[in-house]
Image (cartoon, rainbow, N blue to C red; front, side):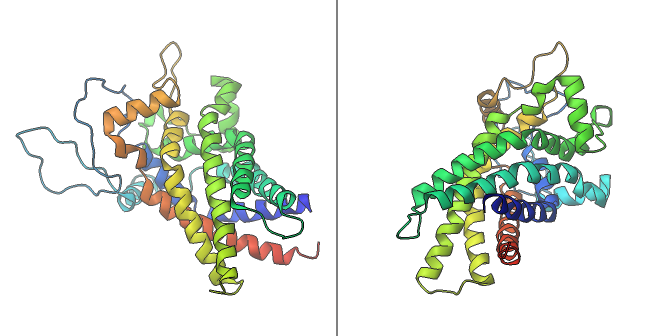
Length: 322
C-alpha cells in the first residue's frame, strides 16, 4: 500500500508539473524582476519600487519633479516578451528539470503524506484531525524537498537563463547537464544551494495544499454539498491552491533569487543567505517585492493543484485493484 501511494502521487505530480510548466517559468521571471544580473544592488537606493508585481508598463511619461521607479511588466507581457525574443519553445525551458523534480520531490512528499495520514488515522472513527494532517504535510514536504533540491536548482536556472545577457547565459542542454556542470564548476554543495528555503517552502506548500484539500473535500462530502466526483475535487483543489500560493509566495521569491544568483570566483556572492536576500530585496524594491509573481503563482498553483488532485483521484481509481 505504501509503494502504491508513491506511484500514484508521482504520476499525478509529473502530469501536473508538465501541464503548468510555462506558468511556473513566467512566475520565476517575475520574481527576478528588479534584480540586475550584471550589477550589484545599490545600497544607497532610497526610493523602493512599491508597485505591485502584476502591474503593466505605464504608457505615461514619468514626472520630472522627482524620480519614480518604472512599472514592472505583468505575466501576459512577460509571456509575450519570452515568445518574441526566445520563441514559443522557451516557455518550456527547463521542463526536463520539472520532470526530474516532480519525480524526486513530489513523489516523495505525496507518497509520504499519504502513508503518514493512514498511520495517524483514528482506528475507530476512521478520520484524522487537521493538526495531524498539517504535521504530515510538514514532514512529507521537508523530506521531499531535501531529496529534490538539485533538480529544483537546475529548474530555476534553466527557466531564468533567457533573461541573462547572452555572454552570461549558462545554456544548459538538459537537467543532467545542468547538475553535472554545477558540480564541476561550483562544487557539489551548489546542488543544495537554497535548500533551507526549499525545505521551508515545501513544508508550507505541502501542509497547506494537501491538508486544505483533504479538509475541504471532507467538509463538502459531510455537509452533502456535492457528491464525491469531479465537482468536489475541483472545488477543494481551488481552495488548496489559493491557500498554498498565499502562504508560500514570499519564501518562493527568496528561494528563486538565492538559487539563481551567479557566484564569481574570488567575488563575494550577491546574497549571504536567505535573510540577507530578503532584507536587500525589501530595501531595494519594497515589501511587496516578496509577493512578486503572485498572479502567475496563483495562476500556476490553481491549475497545478486542480490537475494534481483530479489526476490523483483518477489514478487511484485505475490502480484500486493493485
